[in-house]
Length: 233
Image (cartoon, rainbow, N blue to C red; front, side):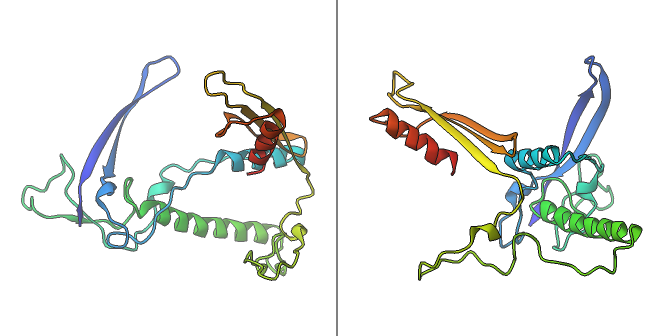
């Protein structure tokens, strides 16, 4: 399928509201692509806020330094595996061959293949960076060991009901605690209670929530149980 292109224009302002630069981005109308026909798989390379909180809290608990890097245009520097054809962008049409199309070699914003291509390129870059660190400190000849979560231990259904050791799946050395409470019949209109919860990793708050319960609790105790069950979802 031929994918259409579109120009997106944006004015970037500084902190005083003045024009810093005019930006133009060429994007593909990837919503026309169909899974299994135009692409095999796709995903959104966005971290959940809970994961970011846990990471930062763990680093703060162990008094570690966290560095953040931003690589310009890294999202667009990866090769495409599929054959993707796009039309000639507006303003750059070849007058001698107006009906010709382009075949993309690298990822472009809007394509369903772009996030996967970016991830594959990122994994290669991180592997190269990790090898450079090992060589820098003379550790390239060290033998690898298993991670704290053993990959050979599968989370399959146990039909015999044999108990498993939960420490195989959590061994961070930091306690995870949670607190929950409920405001019984806090909403006078719907008669529903409000749940409140907070989760701590060590002494760092990593997640919190305050929302109306989905069902009507007939007692304060029931409202507390609903809040407690929602705290550990």
